[in-house]
Length: 418
Image: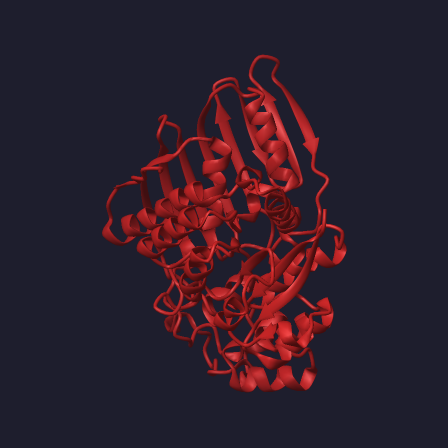
């Protein structure tokens, strides 16, 4: 079978990450086209993948207008730029891999899913956590009945202090009007993961959270608007000079958001003039920096989810309480305590990559793109774990949780699957 031909819309961090899989698996997939408005980014991406000049476009509409030049399209633009291309490519019958979150409103998410259903192509949302070796191991243990019936779940997402400052205080997800709620942008992953692991739809949710720390009244005495000129930056955990200086040396995923070309001179200018050089206590951020979601599933199982900025950057941690035992997992291992024997069984996980987007989400990025490519090649929607129906269902749970936080209410999660 010939390799699946991929087109990429948006050659930023996520687009590059997913496309890189094809470089390592040329027998399965090849990237043949790109739509990216930034000339230097587009040229670098095209050179990396050997894309012909006439297959490089400045806008997704030009790519779509070129006809069916690929077997599938990866839509990896910013959150508020998903809806229009997703619907247009779906209407044209394309196979689509869409970065999460699908869109910033419930109405747009429904429109995208309806278009995907009508278009008939394979459709997957990038809920990469479903595809990690860790999740597959945990899910198989649960499905084996090792702890009996699931009664309750605790789940923690430790975003990491510098990662949160990068993305949600200085970065494109800092302001809800420009992107979406933090819960949607960061943690639609996690509610989707809980739905997958528990195996039952959400019924009701409530939520609490706030912007507690990254505010002007918490700025250290003497702090200035920019880190490069700040006299107290040596004692500040959020110093942009240190975070991105180290990022340039270590080629972290974050640095590619700050500068398109990895050069020290460009970084210096970006920190002097751009958004990533601002003091974290003096930006236009308004999204919460901590949030708790309480949930009830359709079978009465309960759960709690905490997402917080104030941690090291490390893997998620989960406890699952069952009628016959308890599971603890942290990405590296799964520990099962059996009530009958009072013994603990430990399963070590053979991880692929590390924590976070730049490290492949512990193998989740590779697992996702591999499943999608295979689904396209075999024209089999069932081969992806994050198709249109369940992805819409879990997005609606996130929207309900955020409404619950804002209104101080308990919200029902209602979704009628077609």
